[in-house]
Image (cartoon, rainbow, N blue to C red):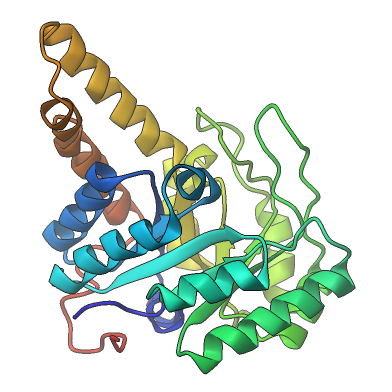
Length: 290
C-alpha cells in the first residue's frame, strides 16, 4: 500500500528543496494518468478531489477510485480533499480513506477561520490524516477578487491551528488559462519569515504561475505544493477534440476518453520534473504509508 499522508510528503519536500503537484482530478482517466506519470518519474503525487469533482461524483466513489490507484502504485500517493467546506465533509472524507483534507475557511473572519480549521485539524490528526488550511483568499479569474495573505495573519493562523500546510494568496488566481504575471515574491518572503520558514506553503491556482517561477520557488522557498488543474484540463480537452476530429464516427466512450491519457501523462511528467519531484520517491527516506 502506498497511501501517504500529506504532512510527511511535504516535510521531505521542504527539507530537500522541491514541491509536489496537487493534481485536480475530475475522473478515472486523468487520475490514472497522474499516477502513471508519478511512477514513471519516481515521484510522490497528490490526487485532489475538488468541489467540481464532488458535485459530479459522490465522494465515496472518488475515495474508492483514489484508494485503488494508490494501493496499486509504487510511489507515495496522497488522497486529498480539496476546498472542503465543513467539518462534516472532512469527517466523511476521512471515513472514505482520504489521507489529507483541506478546509477552506478563507472567506470567514480570521478568528472564525482559525476556530473551524483547528477543529478539523484535531479531527484529522486523531485519524492519522493531514490537514491543509487557507489564510487570505485566492480569487478566481474573471470572478471574485483575491485578498492577499498578511504575514501577521499567517503567523497566527499557523500557530493557532496546527495545520500541516498553509495555502496563501500572493498573486495566484484560480482558473487561469494562461501563465501570466506570476507570484509576488516579496509578499511570499514576508509570509515565510513570519512563519519561520517551517510551515509548508501551498499555491492554489498554480496553472497561472509561469513554469520558470514554479521551478525556482519550489527549489528556493517554503512552497512545497502547487495545485494544478486548469492546464491539465486544457490538455485533456485538446486531446479529446483531436480524437473526435480524427475519428468522427467514433462513439465509444471508453475509446474516446482513453485517448486523453497519453497527453495528460506527458504533461504531468513535465510538471513533476519542473517542481523537482522526479526521483524523490526512489530513496529510502520515504514518508510512512497507511
